[in-house]
Image (cartoon, rainbow, N blue to C red; front, side, top):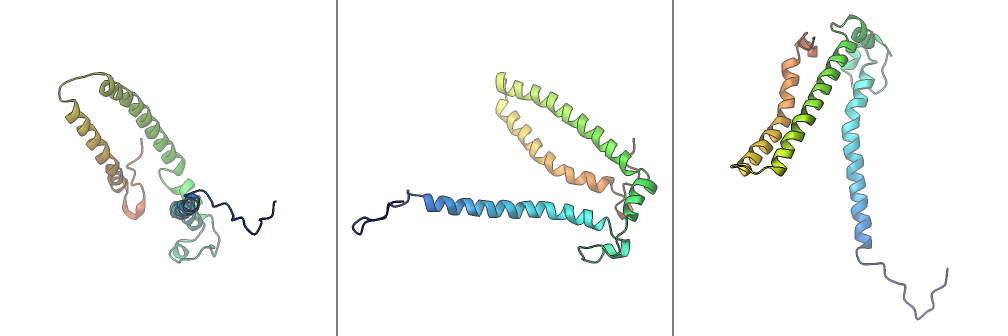
Length: 157
């Protein structure tokens, strides 16, 4: 590294360099915060699954006493059991994904290549339905849930 002479000034950093580092730091802080916001509930569910029912209401991180009773109930005495519920969800997810791929591809081709009357209102109508459809997902959880959060046999096939 060459030493600076008394008459020479240090070369200034390129314009915007400091601002870019600050923006990048802010983005990383926001992303880490968002990741924690999304992951903490899942971690809390896993931790709570190893607690007893009375202990689950307390806000403690380490289960005291540590028990597998919740897992035994979920895999053993819950009807339908967790494996059946998982299988039902997987079948529905695969069917919906394949249907969306096929119908979405055909609709996308029609909107991109074909010209027909009322094309712009049709675009608006489809976009509106897609936007509203995302909110309908929350209704299904309320319909399927029974007393105490159990599935109430509504998801069996």
